[in-house]
Image (cartoon, rainbow, N blue to C red):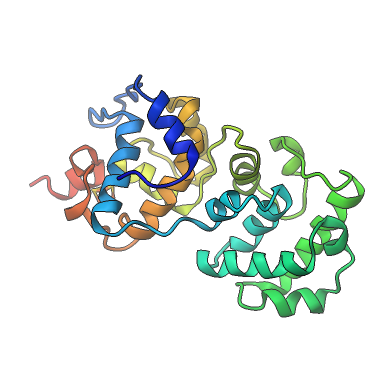
Length: 247
Ligand code: SF4
């Protein structure tokens, strides 16, 4: 069973035409759709995964501003905690104007379960002020403008594009970076390089699903330490698995 968002349903309907990824690494050849389907099949065969914090906010239609703030808060924080905290925060401060005039110590009280909450409290108030004054309350929907915001790098900006505006982008966090390299899709040293390489080899129509599916897979199956390769349904095409079982 395929779970997830409406986007997956759209892709299932429209995804009959597969593009083969380049066979640059060890003769690797697998379609991105087969990778995404294989990941979902694996997860669903064990236990349907919990949706990610950003997908949760997207599905709840909380709006671009909450996705932006949620992405900033999500760094080094468990998904469950991010979702819960963002919902409480936005029940008190409903828009950029209200958050912009919040007191740091009041915001700290709400987000204290989040990692680095001192820094993040100041940062989200600062971002709210800019969104309110410079952009008249509307979160920008282009990468170049988003990365001008304090504390917003390419990953956060791409998350806003994908989860707030459904614009094709590939947010690369540690999970996307690790799994892409393990599979042999890329051979890169950091998330920025991974993003550039993935954009070259994956058709745009799949970009919206990469982050969400890879992050869930990284949290549940292809974990940083001791990945569950035995149950992984895409292991036959995985460079890491092949290398480990080569002898
Ligand atoms: S075979 Fe192992 S390392 Fe490769 S994608 Fe699957 S879980 Fe990750």
